[in-house]
Picture 1 (cartoon, one colour):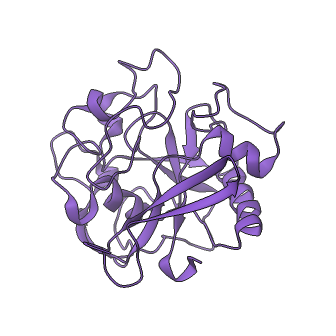
Picture 2 (cartoon, helix red, strand yellow):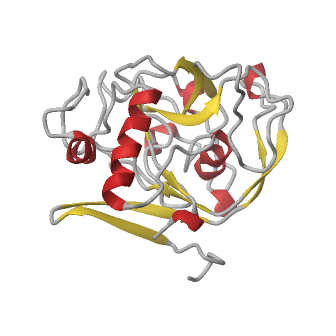
Picture 3 (tube, rainbow, N blue to C red):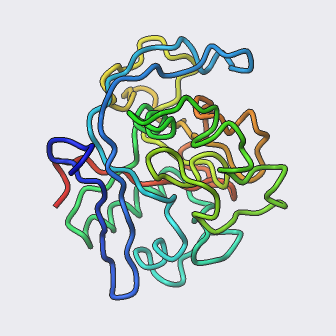
Amino acid sequence: MIGIHNMIKQKLIEKISDSLSFEMIGVEGGSFLMGSNEEEAFKIEQPVHKVQVPDFYLGKYPVTQSLWKAVMGGDNNPSNFQGDNRPVEGVSWKNAHQFLKKLNELTHQTYRLPTESEWEYAARGGKKSQGFKYSGSNKLKDVGWYSKNSYGETKPVGLKYPNELGLYDMSGNVWEWVEDDWHDRYTDAPDDGTARLAADWGTVRVIRGGGWGSEARSCRVSYRLSFEAAERNYDLGFRMALSPSSAG
């Protein structure tokens, strides 16, 4: 495909039923500086370090309630703000993994949570990055739902502008789980795009992107936060990733 190399396509469309499918965007790998030294950055965003991210696919949108119900069962919707095209929320990191297990059984794929570095690389626009503070713009209102424009609730996905890669809602709307264990600094973090995991850690995970109740500072592409893996919150959802080697 033009602009994307090797085995990765510009997009993949996974059909769940005659009336429901979802789209994965091809993200061409590359290197980037992860984290931030900007004046408003926190120490948890440092030290800034170079990461080489391989090709991967990332969901065009966060997982919606319609997709969640199709996989988990129509009566199983944990969301506080109901609506088929709204992102599913009220899901723990463990709930997200339960969903992915069932989805993979249905599709015979290997969908997963993105790593933290994959998430940030994609939020920044990957190789097409224009260096925006938020995912797709320096004006958060153009690309995200947050405390000043959400009126205290989630919104249907895809109503704001996408980022450079065609990904929507990566700043605001709902926080998104990633695979990594939480560490409060990037010291000794992987530089190859893999998740940072430790056998003796693991109960606290990373969330990214900010949500409908967040201040603008928390919706920056470099901002990160921690959350207990078993906990749920009504501004917390997730987005799926897929490695090219796993794509059928």
